[in-house]
Length: 349
Image (tube, rainbow, N blue to C red; front, side, top):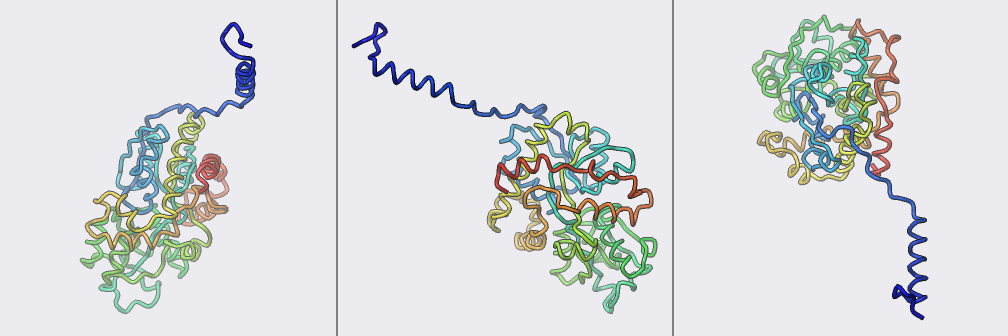
């Protein structure tokens, strides 16, 4: 039997079944519309291994895959990068988590929403040239110490290390050495008696026999020895208001970064070399990879803020900065794991 529309009874039945089944299927969730696709990000020293996850996500196109047009501006130091986001020059900052605590103490509400590094990734070494007979940290009293910047992770590392032998920051002379070139030149010329810096600076000095490492935060164990607990470092943070108004955009940034973290979990030396810009390698691939090996454990696995880490950061900052009153800081407002949890589930990080 053929119906007037040309369909047999059997064909009509199949069509009806298909239509009824299709209507019963749940609609696939649409990709959330981004409140903003154009984002300006500030960073202090982008070539530092602290921000390797950011570089990986950028180089592999993960931000673009999330629908983001990301402009990354390198301000050289963490302080200047943070100032850029406070002034509104940047929307988001890739910097140390401790900045969110410092900013809250100055009545600014900023929040970290995805982690890159679980430790400050610094190393503290004495100059073999200037202090060949070094035996104890008390010998650093009155000496000149190089750090990335005052209020940086390297400054905190030195201050807390000195506190273990009852020395205060005022017992030494700090010199800011923000770039790799300035740090290497100052130490090797004999201008510094000791230096605390990030990699690849410290691995370079260590391999050449210029320094003897006396404390480090490149590993979880070393960080606990210096800070007395887990100490979070590199993250993405922004004004709380920006995060509240742009949740889908922040989720997209978090997705891209956690995707990069996932990639780094299994990346081999060759993968790293192919992905990182040549200028970051400083003409020495072996040295860069050696530096990467030093900090690999420090790199976040899933972008989540580790438990108790914010409290460690607050305790450390309050111990060296009298302007930060621990009892007046609301740690719950300095970070959120909401975005990282969703990204972790998506990428199985």
